[in-house]
Length: 177
Image 1 (cartoon, rainbow, N blue to C red):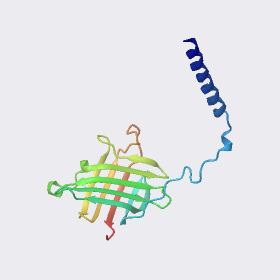
Image 2 (cartoon, one colour):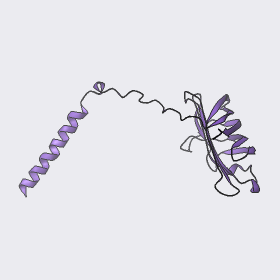
Image 3 (cartoon, one colour):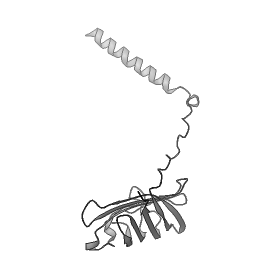
Image 4 (cartoon, rainbow, N blue to C red):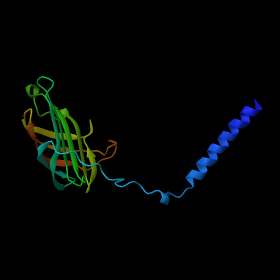
């Protein structure tokens, strides 16, 4: 019993000493790999389009990078749009559903709206806080366009106020397959 306790104590002390020695090693000797901290490359654009908007009063325009229009459910469209600049400093992501037979301009159908800009940081639409005016101008299985304006945006935690995103005009069309 005493022999087992001494062995376990010895292992614990060895582990502690190795942790201390390794943690004292100078970090300057270990450079991060190339590209560390840089955003991943954008996927190739799968559509064409652009968005114009104001974030905190600053006007921006971004090209479409990704578009998805899912029509698997009858009488329902699930739309996802990502607009981003080449340096990935500014980005707008919008997701919504639409059921044209029930009315297509209900802002409660927005399932995700996040804007990130170099000038004003992150703003997101938050349930029961953000108020949006939303209108779909055109929607088919291959293309979408519309307008959006949201006030009372929040940060990602949905706890702090963030700049409003207004005067949004978006369009997107899937590339030919």
